[in-house]
Length: 394
Image (cartoon, rainbow, N blue to C red):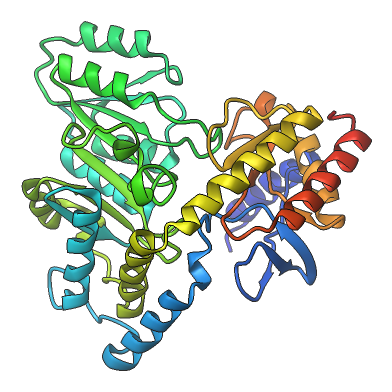
C-alpha cells in the first residue's frame, strides 16, 4: 500500500476512534432471528430489516432448495446477454401483479434500483426535487445523473411547491422523489399531497418504497396502496432484501418505463442476474404476503406494543409511525455507548451517528418484527429502561 494512502486511512480511522465512533462489524452466528447470537452473545435483535421473518420462512427455504437443485446456483451472465431465465421473468410478472402496475424490472439491490433508475432517466438538462432525508441511493443516483438538484426540507410541502412554482417552464424533465418510509426516522411521506403537487405542476413522481414494501398497504403493497394512489405514481422502487426476506430491488410502473430501463439502466446492463434460488425465494415471499396475512398483523401488533412501551418510559422517538423507531439521544458518542451497553445486557440496537444522521440527532435505531414474542419485547423494554436511566437518557 502506498504510504500516502496508508497515512490518510490511519488518520481517518484514528479520528473515528477519538470520537468513539469507530465500530466493528457484529458477527451473526446462525439465522437472522428475533433472538439471535451476535459475537457469541445471545441477544434480542432489534436491528434487522427482516420485518416479517420471511428470511427463515419454510416456504422460501423450500423454494430456494428446489430451484437450486433444478437450475444450479448461478445464472452465468447479465440479463441482456444469456442471463435471463424463465424464473426471472416470472418474478417480474409477479411483482407487477402485486403492485398493480403494467411491468417491473428486478435489480441486484435496492440501492442499484434507485441509483440506476434516476441516473438513466435524468440528464444534465433535467431537474430533480428531493426530500432532504431521502436515502443515500437516491442521492447517489441524483449525482450520477448530472441533473440540477433542488432539496426541500423534510416533508415541508410549502417549500416543495415553491420550488415547483419557481421552476415552471423549466426546459427539461422535472422529477419529484421521496422515500415512502424514511429509514432513519420511521415516518411516512405525506404522499397524497406530494402527488397532487407533482400532478399540478407537471412533474414526474417517483417513490422509494424500500421500507414500505411488505409493511404498508393491503398485503404489504406499499405506500401507494396505503394512500389509495394507484396509477398516480410514475415510478415505484421497492426492495426484496427487507420484508421480502431475500435479496435485490425492483422498479415498477409502465411497460415503457421497464423496457427503457432494460436498455439504459447501467446496473441492470452490467451485473450478473440473480441466482435462480434468490428469484425462487422472492416468488415464494410474494405468495406468503397474499396467503398469510397473519405476519403483517403480528408486525403491527408488535409495533404498537413496543412504541407504547418506549413512549411510556419517556424516550424521544421522534415522529416514527412504523416499525422503525429511533431513540434519539443527541450525541454520537452517547449513542454508541448506549448501543454497547444495551448489547452487554442482551439487546442489539445499533447506534447511528454522523454522517448517517446529523450529530445532534444521533440515536439508536430499533426495529421490531412480526416474529418477536411479547416476552422478548418486554425484556428489551426492561433493558432499555435500565440502561437509559443509567446513562441519563431518561
